[in-house]
Length: 473
Ligand code: FAD
Ligand code: MLT
Ligand code: ZN
Image (cartoon, rainbow, N blue to C red; front, side, top):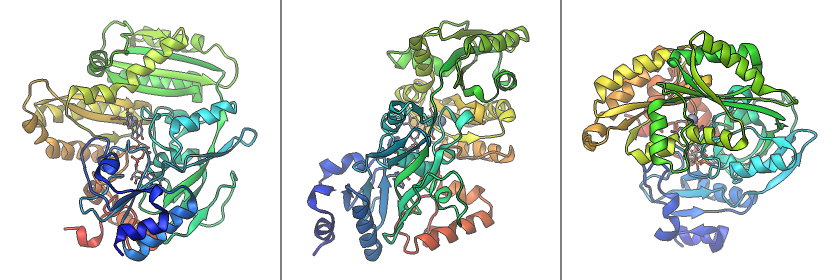
């Protein structure tokens, strides 16, 4: 019996897709960097089916590529070109199993779309604070597998910080489950911490116990024109000094990105500030009733006196707040609409963000003259999307040909500055060689040992994060 017939017997035809038409959307990544082939796309309905599939693939030596919402940026959810791997879509495991408002916990299945998780928390009067531009299509399983960041990390941390425990299926089909919601539990190694961020290479996450928070009752949001990029760091320090951990979001947007958004996103509204090279989107929130507009205004007025802030608009309505957020969250879409871009998802210590911009911009000018810099993002976390767009009319092939030299220069720069070449998007397939280059040999050896221990036959997301010895030069 051929492999497809055996798979059908194992899972049932209704849980498998084989045809080119049915599988196409699972075979290309969001950025269209990779298009693979697959033996099948499997869509199990429950954990026993995931377990049976993995046990079978492990016995048969068949690679399994877990896939969530397929919004990842590093090709981690795309199968290779061999046509021998199975894509395991989690989309049918999409139940919120429980919400406990008193304990401030939720158990959600991996295939729940992030917006669904946020909505379920809100319905119970709670907040699930993870927030990304892709929240309408990424899945919580994908967020966990990539340890996603987003726009509220400053206050609430990354996905790992929001996770109390996981249920996951290991390569041999065995199930590990820690959904108790305990806040204190030191029984042995932290498998949850290990599986979060492992990008489908150590296990398939099927559910998670997530931390919830009280819904903020007060909120203030401002779009701020800055003197320069250095002013972002100075203003953040002022905001934190005055408002502590109420500072929830601090996102940097250059003028060039604002222009792209206003040109390509029909719903975008110009906030109408005096033009500046750099803007900051700041949001502060509090659980109690508080006049945060007044507090934020005071900090901004003091910063304006010192010349840090050139101009600012406070959101006076929910609609205006949404308008400000749209300007920030539409940057990736606007960049995409504007044409090809070279992306670098890097982080440095927060105080060194301006230096990164200055030194990185010099590399862009010399190494990618067909491009222009669009560096934006989570400045409050020291994480910039140091992206470069093709200039209108520039030669596309010449622009593309700059990719590897520019990547080396930017990644070497962040390494020298004590930073990371992968702040929040992960490694996937795209950055495997970068990990080999920048990770310490001792770290790589430890990672390979863990991979071998949990997945000795190398069936889980082969070629992602780490290459097998036979694939390395
Ligand atoms: P996928 O793309 O399907 O998969 C990503 C990786 O996780 C793959 O390696 C896959 O094999 C693995 N995986 C998926 N589900 C599971 C599972 N259940 N078990 C084990 N492994 C699994 N990312 C950020 O961190 N911060 C941002 O601010 C941000 N903004 C974005 C904005 C836009 C517009 C877009 C398109 C993307 C953005 N991203 C951001 C990137 C992306 O949305 C995140 O990486 C997200 O967490 C991926 O989730 P997904 O469900 O789409 O995962
Ligand atoms: C973002 O923060 O907008 C994303 O992580 C970066 C991107 O989409 O390029
Ligand atoms: Zn981001």
